[in-house]
Image (cartoon, rainbow, N blue to C red; front, side):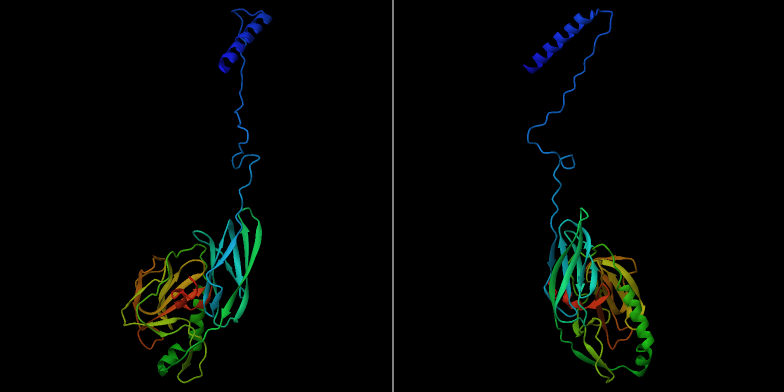
Length: 322
């Protein structure tokens, strides 16, 4: 019906124009162009991005902690959900940049061997996807760890070669620099695992008496005793940052897992990886040995979080909450 009325109106309009102008077959016809606007249904909202559209809601950030109570030399996995694009977490006087994960941004928060016990504030500074900045505040409790004591005896030649203050300082400075490596992408993707079979022969953090001296310092790793030649595997996915011989730790591999988390494997007999190589959790990286300052075949296993050496066993025994 609508088409018929419109057609009839056009016919009558054409006749009227011809009559009023005195047009004939030899004169040009009058062309009338009609533009019909696209109909808009009542109540239909504009599409996202169009004028008048309602802005997409910004999900408020939320802080999730793997544990609210952590031992000295332990680690907290802190995740921040929501529409955030970056930020950092400050805990025990140290700032940890947030790293992009699959479902959130995260940071591993280290507790040093000498950090004070008790409740400590935790602050998150974040930036939302619309450039808005904000903060979240929480706290976590640091629990005192009981450090064991061990007595070690080294020969005069070992003491002269390996315990020289300059040798120790040089190696520690080199490792400290490497352990502060911060890769902005998450490389690990599975549960953390122990790198080799074998009994626990020395705990992280234990104090040591060398040749009868008073106990001092803290052991920087976890020692796992195994026969020489036992396979050593990567504790999680990452990139080999270092594979070389060191004076104290012998043949050593360091793997960067991203987000400031690195693992180290010392006293090995050989290398099964090269620097720059990507490894998956469980990939062979070498074999147990007795190189460097060592009193028997074992693996020295270290874990570092933003330059702070922490207890590696707590990555696999559940006491960190992950």
